[in-house]
Image (tube, rainbow, N blue to C red):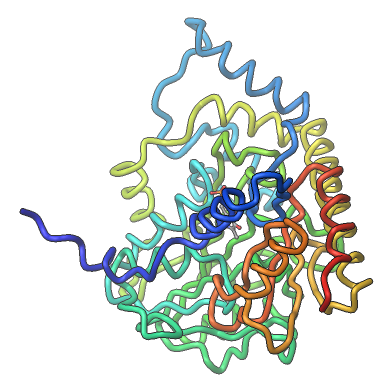
Length: 401
Ligand code: PLP
């Protein structure tokens, strides 16, 4: 018989969200009359808006015609790659530097193949779990030591450092995951902060994987939406992004990754050429229908709908944030991001999660699931129907904090 992959054996317990789902099911089974509301996961809830939806429908229809049919498109439709360059990067990238994916999460996992087992990895702490779990799966990190994984450098992001890490902790020659607007804290790095990150990465020979999945939620024009707004970043950063949250494509599956031509390994080889090789080897491209929807999302009417949808979720975020603040709970996020990060000093996250579930029948996400520095925090997600969010906010007043 074959032995189990040691890397899988190294992964601690279940992935965070299945564990939350398990606890929710358990609660529902013992409280059959409970009307549970989820402010937990980051899954979208609102329908795809009409113009973008029509783009998807039209994409499917075209596949049924001789002139409109298309098959494999490994790196993605040229027109979509060019449109992404125009809309998000002022045409500063060629189509060959933009790779269409079936979502940011999938590419975050696949990107690890560029660097392999034994790579030093640094993450914001707390962070989106896939950066760490993906590193364990590829063998870049080793087993759980009680507070974290061996081989991962955790960069604490706390109230004391205003949720931006101390870059003197960044090791040399590491792969650095950085997410802004951040999941789970909702913090958005300023231009100055990203300049210091790029400078540190260049000095220390690091490569940044910049996750911009929530960039369309930024409303403050002074805040950078892409790492490539920072000079010098093309030689030290890869950027992943997604249509999931801004266009409601969590189930449609579409994203992109930018791998600049200027990005080189320590030996001078092209990272872009390797990424094209990997994409052609183990990924046969995103759905053509999804890409037709993506093109619709990026024309002027589509961008208006993206704004409308993100405004809706930001409206939810504002309601949650003020409900928490009315209870005297200190929190950040929710203004340029769909997540609110609430602090419960001296408490364990899973205990607060259980209390909110018991008292309010509201599912949240325990901060400790995002890394050691997430202990004592709860993440509230603004993805929900308005009536549910309003009901959840009114139930939160039952909390005796
Ligand atoms: N990156 C971050 C920070 C996320 O929070 C998520 C989803 O919640 C993703 C990436 C995944 O995006 P996609 O649906 O494109 O895989």
